[in-house]
Length: 344
Image (cartoon, rainbow, N blue to C red; front, side, top):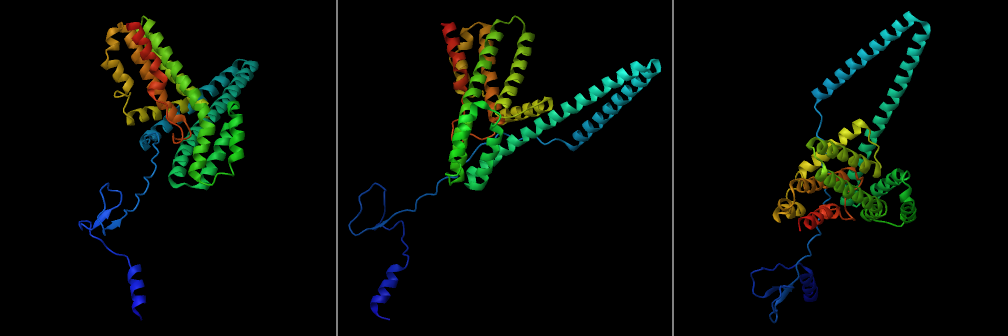
């Protein structure tokens, strides 16, 4: 083997350098390089993995609690059945036409009960589907999975068929469905097309609800009226947000949805005591400058807005990735500005 071949192999071998060697200069360190020094370029840092925050999952139900409610429901159902059966027998003993009338009413009651039960089951299944789609979107973004993103987009397009306001967005998204290669890009495009109009409507709903609570609390003479109105407004707001994003919650669905909203509020810091707007109200003394009722109205409006923002994140079938999440200042800034004008 000649000397030229040995030198070529030696030059192709990786060379190790000591960082404390004065002849080694890292590229881009800002200092002048020495003559004859060896310049070492550090390897580029790997991009940080995108982290998508999801709403807190529902707390797991206790097996004993499920067994208790199952037994109680079965006993109540049997008791109602026996009472209706005894009533119909008594009606037949009085007169045949009374028995047949009672039998018809019982049949109507049974049919309506089955319809309501089917609606409740459908509402619970739809809420579970929305939660599953949100988790699926987070996985598609993290793994850049094209197949998972395409499945997610098709399911969301099916849910959006019932919304006339999304007709143009659905048409544009279907036209670009085959042109997107990356899964994460497809998820972001789906969010921009389908969620942007719904987010704007949801922000408007939360802002209007917060203003109504603020005004009614300020002018209401009774604390009980305030409590009832705030409770009804919160229930109606959460239900309208769920319907906006494709949910169909019934009575059981609303209970499940409220549990998830409260769990999300607990995880994200309760009623946003450290939020900038609440700090503005407390720090600048706006509530102290106003009358007691008006200050209470502003605070209740802020809390309603915070509840609405948590409901948006819970009912939205996609996490916020391509679009910014609405902040408290977007839905409740008018409450503080109105309070400042009143105080002045």
